[in-house]
Image 1: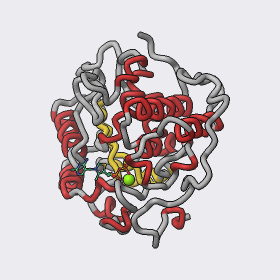
Image 2 (image 1 turned 90 degrees about the vertical axis):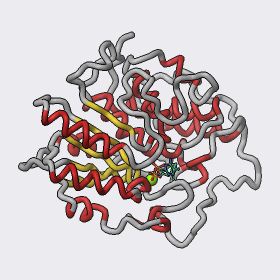
Image 3 (image 1 turned 45 degrees about the horizontal axis):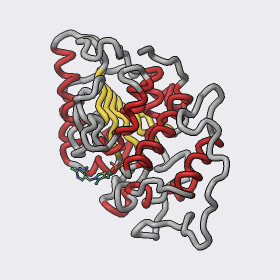
Length: 314
Ligand SMILES: Cc1ncc(C[n+]2csc(CCOP(=O)(O)OP(=O)(O)O)c2C)c(N)n1
Ligand SMILES: [Mg+2]
């Protein structure tokens, strides 16, 4: 298996397309979470992480943890497209007997930690970074968290530990899509001034549009003149790339059903397909898509509270 050379935009698109297919085939969930983090994952696997599909356990590899493990399809797709295993296997995701379990499994080549129970990725990443410094290794540790996940106390305990121990080799990326599983973060346990909180915990903070590859590029490259860990606040849209899913909480759990949901999802992705990428499932999109039935509540907001909306932040 060879690593396919792709730009981060091309890889991000592939992650989105695999994510639609994997959730569609399995009846699996969290598609909106996969879509919001696809650009971060594309950037990491196309350009940032020093990992080798021929030697997934290389002692000197960069470590990566997808702490928001419910978006497991995004890391499986990134690994398959990077040559860690065949992309054909992605179709088994969430099925009985598949090693590509719904949440992330460390039995899959290239995965450093099983995740899905939120709040554990940063503590483990901090431990890996601490060990790396103690052992005089030059690997780096990257961890992706959800913003709702940051309601977990263990995140802030690890944040203090990382700053106290000057873990400069640690980068956390928060997929700040303003939503969690049932509602907006603001309406669940508000994060307050999020950037200021990380700063107060002793971290270097970069806040960017996390669906913009140029901004991601600058954020990953940005150096600070101190020994502190770095957090990239990636301001994203939950469901980004498929308009009828954007900022609609329904698509945290719902999968694209047969018929118009799947057809429209695929065709929406085809509208933003970068040049030079092939769709492995429906090369030309869906040619005769099922029409959206009359009365479908397609653009309605399904959020439990309707008094605040993330689009207001702009
Ligand atoms: C410890 C724990 N509690 C609850 C859940 C159930 N759960 C799965 S996804 C989710 C919402 C996570 O929101 P966020 O971290 O913002 O991720 P997003 O899907 O928005 O990227 C919750 C509560 C879980 N996986 N782990
Ligand atoms: Mg979120």
